[in-house]
Image 1 (cartoon, rainbow, N blue to C red):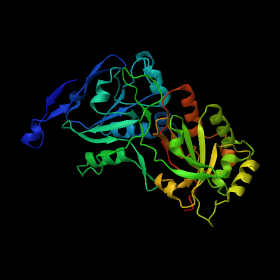
Image 2 (cartoon, rainbow, N blue to C red):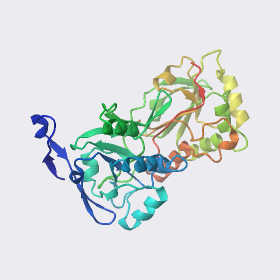
Image 3 (tube, rainbow, N blue to C red):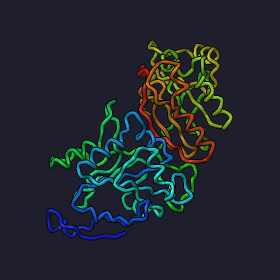
Image 4 (spheres, rainbow, N blue to C red):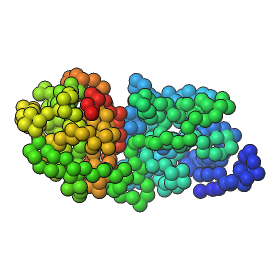
Length: 373
């Protein structure tokens, strides 16, 4: 790691060291960040077996590929960086880089290999995909996700920052949260993460059999929370008898010793609200087997967790941290026929838990019926 003073707008800034690194690309050529001083630079942390990365490059949108092509054409340097250590999930051998880039359809200025993690740790990169925008003076002007969701709308943070920066306008964002696969740095073990997400708030609710249940009762176990409304077509889509997707997830969770709690936050008199007897009857009718069906008629627990739709999922670690939050899959529809071809994030979480590896996907945009508080 090299640090050097770069001229800036003031004498104080002139003495301020700029972050730098020296890494080799997939062809063995050395690159220093400082060699691109005078140009706008995008640093993109990338993991080739990370689903959020693949999704960002996948057709038809090819979001990151399109950004690379557009901004490289405007003189922006784009450096993709792989900081996963040798032997860890996501590590990429130099000999396989060319094929991996071709498979993604990626075309950065260079793909840099950072197996010791020095560049990733210096810039505080935690997940893939994650980006930093470096000004011509060498300052980090933006860090975080390349896009995100605000007020239900996709916001293209990276594109907005680059457009503003290269046109001389004020940069509207300095940082946004990044979602993706955790970078496994050198000396870390590929195990289920401990305390990597926000702490799950404890609650106390009564189930459909009159048993009082607390989330804290299950500390030491994985827990899945499913916000449910049996009258919602988006929920019915997941339970449809043509595929019984949710029922299969219930059964698999039980085999793995995972606690599955359905929570109904519908208020009395509103869609989805059911008496305990009605809820049990519907569970039997659909062949569903969660650990428990919990009643939250005041909506206190749903609101505390920010649950907005049904189904809205949470996966909570044995340490009590939320490791996944969001929609159950990637196809926004109420059609049961779409379920078998969808990417089910909870199923992926169960696969990761069983394999004792970090969850590949940490968040997804929720969709469905709004919770009837």
